[in-house]
Image 1 (cartoon, helix red, strand yellow):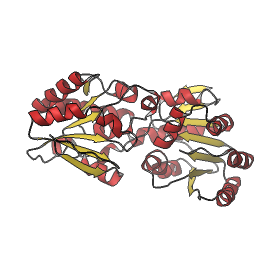
Image 2: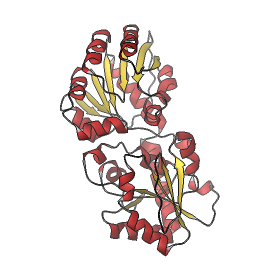
Image 3: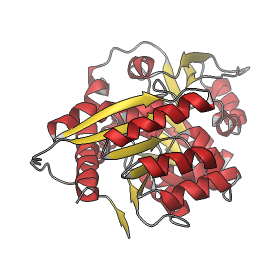
Length: 342
């Protein structure tokens, strides 16, 4: 069975007995885990579902002991990790129901670089349900899994200061969000950024990441890519940039960085690839650019016409609020688990 989720209205769910869910992950502090799983604990509790989170140990014996906890739960969720064959065999015998959430840079790279990875294939086959971060990743899982759901990574729109309420300085800030694995996409348009820096003295680039680079003609402001920094780091930015290059990995990316930027009401110039091409509507909430000339023209247009950018940013924020806000996606997750437990 295959089904994709669309935004739905809130429903009242009642349970005679609380459904107990155990979440296993490698790193409880990883941002994508916090965004996709951990933040929903309260939402699930309000719907009669108790969720416990366990960070797996690094040693094999310790992990196997942790798997024994699954006997006490109705559902086990593997969040952003792929188990070895032995681990999967043990857990599958103990868990009543097994869900795999496929998200996170490591897992998406694994799927992209080694789609025939034996551990990935085995886990997809024995999972009772697979939750994917977008439709493209869902399609890859469906090569082996029986039941797959697409559940986008949400953002909490109320945490971002609307553009109209911000204080401005004399700078015009471009902003990019990513990490070491996606930084090469930004480097691809470095010549465009250098040209922008030559034309406009007031333009700076803010890179929200775990790795950075410098430009000769434009000041670069590095910011660590942690949630507590992202909200504030977007508060005085003017134009988001989301360059990608066509490929499996780019199409598997879940688009959460674009949602951060849109949630802050910032317009985006993006490559028409994957989630970027789906969310960025040309001349509605941003601009699409396929080559360096188009990137240069799009950025110049928004730099010289900030009012147009604010209109695009408002439209982007409304898109996220209606379709990707935490309140929306949390109800979808509740509905998935409710249907799954029938």
